[in-house]
Length: 227
Image 1: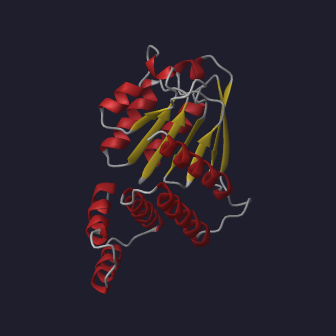
Image 2: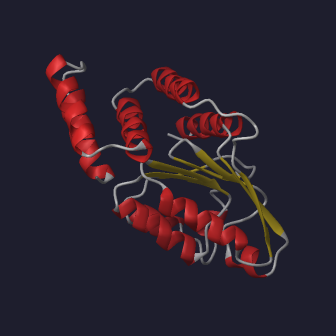
């Protein structure tokens, strides 16, 4: 079951803003028929919260929904430091690039990208593929760098990806991305070929909720200020 099919089911349930007993039974029947494992349940949860956020206009309401999603996730699968996944990758070399592309390919519900610039076509192709597959993709970038030669921000926007650029005199210098609101990539690594081939850069991959949740909130806050 792909994200488009999941959205179709959840959208029909969301239409009247209540979960009736019949809808609950139908939803449970779908999950039983598919023998839903943790991956499918995670996809349903992620898309349900994403659709709920999209259905409200007030930023404060979206913040409350994000808080609820993070709380439900924390209660559903509490993680300890020992169980959390942590990976470090360094360049020159394709370790950081491969880690980024792997996370893009694994995303099932959403990808929130907040980076200074994107010029590496290998990353852009992976993002566009995820977008075509129904993953909810949002991108924040620096306004000055967006107009540099080789920038892929316009390419992403032209493909229908929601892109927002900062409007300040200072730079939007973040380099992080959150996948399904469950996994984080951050570090000094710019999403460019130079970062992979020449620069000394780093990328950290983590699914520790204590890291993922603050980055998710930071993205949501920045996204809303750039509306």
